[in-house]
Length: 303
Image 1 (tube, rainbow, N blue to C red):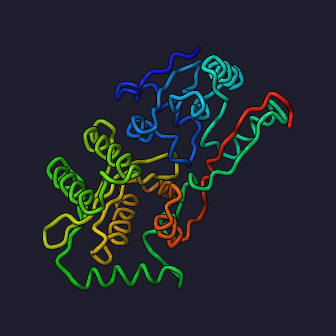
Image 2 (image 1 turned 120 degrees about the horizontal axis):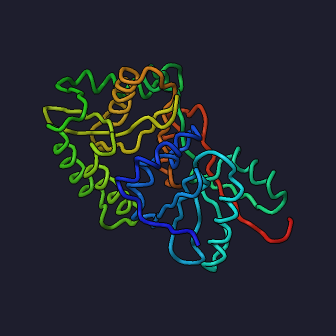
């Protein structure tokens, strides 16, 4: 069996090079994502050869694996994962699998995997220029919200620093009180991940920005480079009753990304988890592409 263990901050040193080797544009191929969500997702990791393997869940009928991240011959790694699943009495399932990874599995074991679409887990990816310029008729509403926000005056944007990080945390606590994080299981899981991100903000190498109105923090966001041309936005919070706060923090952070990382062309704003309101909001920005993160399930008999 593979010796899976909880992910520690110190694991970043060996895990990140293996993750970056694939240059994937899906948010799950990222150390921060794995680290801050590991408690909610019951994630553990192991290194095999030049690959990182992450295993999720604890019950035999709910365990699944992430596709191996790294380089070299992937077949023995996948075979070891199959053996691990069998030893634990669970079906061999790979979650968050991308189309190019599906092609590899099909080439290695033709007809033995059944692939299932998992729309709730698809990542929304946008052109960085689009998020800044908001050009065209379809995004005129975003421009109008931002214009009204600016017209009201008394606002400012700044990068997150050691001096203002605590203000963002306090704003997050208020956001949770207003939105009932403790009563909604999905929000409670997210709250746990956000807390981990704040606690380890500097160690994870995160970047962020905040929006003030009347001196008060009303929105903040955090992210980091995901691959060679795509940035990932891990967290974005704003007080919904303040018109224009969400589109404003989105645009201002995109401008910060362009200034700090001129090589970035896209921003991955992660999935909608099937939430109708979140899906509508993310679709309203007209994504340029989606990272199709689906499911692969092994069957002993050829389909």
